[in-house]
Length: 373
Image (tube, rainbow, N blue to C red; front, side, top):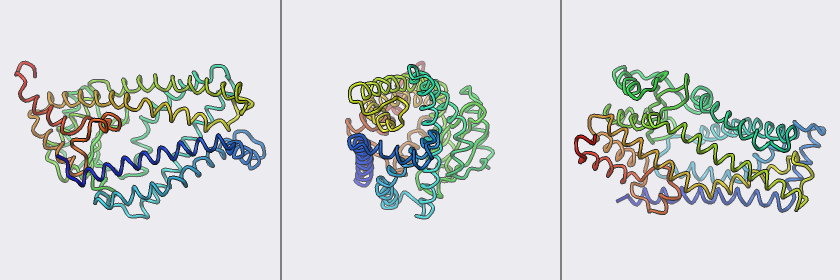
């Protein structure tokens, strides 16, 4: 059974997510129904001396600032929530600095994507949605490669792992899984959080193992190996590639739907004169938001399937499943996770199987006939 504290913490976090989603949805609808999206476009044009490219930069900035201001109270409540449940070490000033850096990174990425989007709409109004889809796939792969070396270090400190024995053990485990890592790093997570985590990040030359210092301090070498074995299971089963394919299919459907909706809005509602009128950006975001909402249970179900496969790989790769079981239970305690959420909560919200199910699967594995292992 979960502790009341864990249930309360996760229930509040879910409601924060729901409120944040509804607030964003309402903002998009208000912008479109009141015509304020057009007003902001006109302001951007005037401020940029009628320069289209610069006007897009200003328009994206105004939308992001409005969104950030409306959601800031929820973000701050989330910051206080982590402290309330003794899960955070971060000071307010450090959190505000992270929020500022996160906003700048989001703004830069949004400008790149939106400028590319409307450039393609202007150059190829008939096939923009297909070309943009292909370009976005390339950006996703590029960001996956660059994130460990450019984005993550902006928010966290990393250093090469000093424990040579553990490092060698994890590198050997990676080699048995058929993947080469470019290093094993200590992740200074404790500067901000009391939670523990580990990951296999990056692609190709940027692939690396990162281990939170909170994990290194509180878990045995066997438990850390079990956690990493799970992460390597994703590599063995090609989950990153499969996830990219799934995301590609969803994104293709999203761009097709966005193109259809834009044409419908122009031909039936006459609210936009051209496809390249960037005042229609809130409508594109609205289509993406609604589509993501309805597909979330299916995406999470696919993710849980992958996690179960990765768990089974871990069971095969380690000498005993006992460290896996103990690490799962310790992670649940340390991160204040729900071990046994309700069925509907797991179905809709969770990208990972319930910890109680993962532990039960590990125990069941030990009772399998030897030849099945």
